[in-house]
Amino acid sequence: MSRTALVVDDSATIRQVVSFTLKDAGFAVVEAVDGQDGLERADRQRLDLVITDLNMPRMDGIALIRGLRARPASKHVPILMLTTESQDSKKQAARAAGATAWIVKPFLPDKLLQVVARVLP
Image (cartoon, rainbow, N blue to C red; front, top):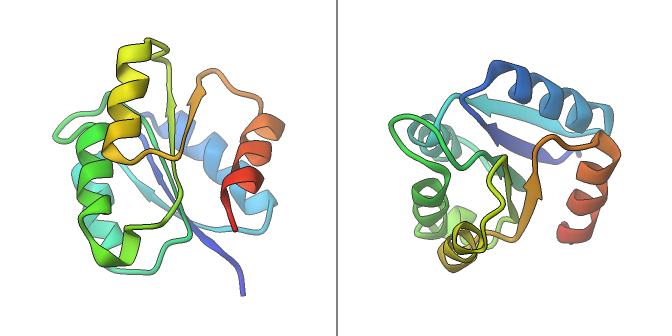
């Protein structure tokens, strides 16, 4: 049975690159255009991994993480923050909300898969 990843980013290009990388590694991928869309999609299916951007319209990545952590079904799902931001204050806010790891864009697909392998049981 393949694992399912939710990829949340307002950039279609980033969603495509991340989705392609994960699909190539055997994941089923669900895409969302922002945090609100991500929460709605998370409510419809079981997830094994979430990868989200920080800065998005309607709902940012921190609010998405808080929303996911408040739901029993996604309370323990690994959540990776994939963003151009690198400030410690943003990282601390994400960690406090429940992010599992932080990856700065641009990223190498192999590096993303290494982090994914590290956070998944």
